Image (cartoon, rainbow, N blue to C red; front, side):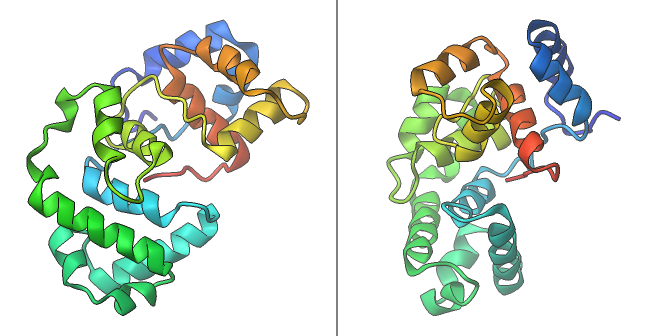
Length: 208
């Protein structure tokens, strides 16, 4: 039942985490499939991540579906061709409309020819966070969901942090240093651990 688009490292990483950490083994056994997979479209993942910033998964899905109806296809040229009010009518804030328009223009003018697979994690984050509206969390979603980098833990992801606190600390708040100490033990497969933490709080797989 392995996903056709699952990362090549997925089974190896799962086995490693299950042997390392009994609580992670329990999570993986409970939510083993489907795995993380990629749509292999960094621009679309970036737009999807901006849509989902600071709103619930359910709300983000609603806005995303409205946006898809409006534009039919997520491409830089189509988004730049749409009037701001059209995009706003999908449920996007005016600020997010500005962000996705700016991302689209930068993609057309500069980033369309970038070979992202050749860049280190740090360089991907550096290039993406130069774009207004794209923070570290959004760049990390690109690393996880599009580039399928195996060792990413997004410290700014509230869902993942709350899952850790629930599973490893009886729901009590943990210091950043404690979280770092725990997540560092999952290296070099922190992406896999993050995926199953997300699944523990929302059994419906998140895909960007």
